[in-house]
Amino acid sequence: MKLLLVGHGKMGKLVGELAPQYDCEVVGVIDPSSPLHGGGPGADSWAGVDVAIDFSTPDSVVTNAKALAARGINLVIGTTGWSQHEAALRKAVADAGVGIVAAPNFSTGVVLFEALVAHAAKLFASQTEFAAFLHEAHHAAKIDAPSGTALSLKRAMEQAGFPRPIDVSSTRAGYIPGTHTIGFDGPAETITLTHTARDRSAFARGALTAAKWVHGKRGWFTMRDVLGIAEVT
Image (cartoon, rainbow, N blue to C red; front, side, top):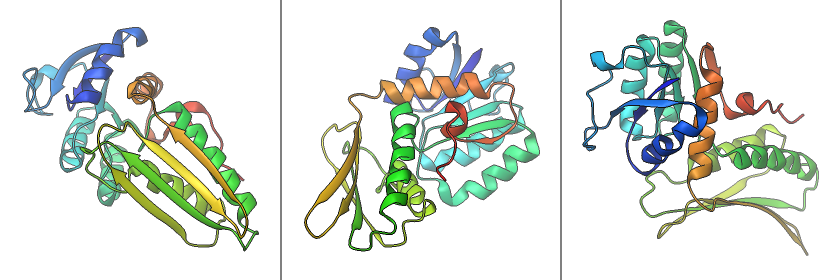
């Protein structure tokens, strides 16, 4: 399967390094800041590309994704911070008849963690003395705060029926790969659930798994679809 990397920072390079383990071949890079940059999304060199994996910047996601989708290239979007443009991208994907996996976090553990968090929120929904909080920490270079994963976790808790405010806070420091903690605090006790990423390879492996899965499919998907995880009811 032929892959195009959109963005060639730490995550893009890691996806490229791991691609052969997933029987994938990286045939090019879109990233003007990279010496491997092969041109924009309209370049002739991308004919025959099966899936583009995007770990770029929020400002470039929609423009590149629309152009690549129009060429019949399926998409895996790992960049966050572009949710205000989701409706436009959904329309472009539908009009082009391609498939996309868009997720704030491609770690298998995080997707399972979200399912656990949603179930916990459902259990605590009727316990009115318990308040909820969410804290996330990432490396200093991460642009968006709170993280896309944090917003997704908060949404999962609300959709599971947690009716009270959920306090959300963020830390940006050093080289933290990513830590998300959900807590429920009552008058005399606290319950916390935490996911900690030890390195970025979990995200790269998840993106490659998603690319293999979405190849040949049409529609808008998340990592729940890729992993076959049902919504919490």
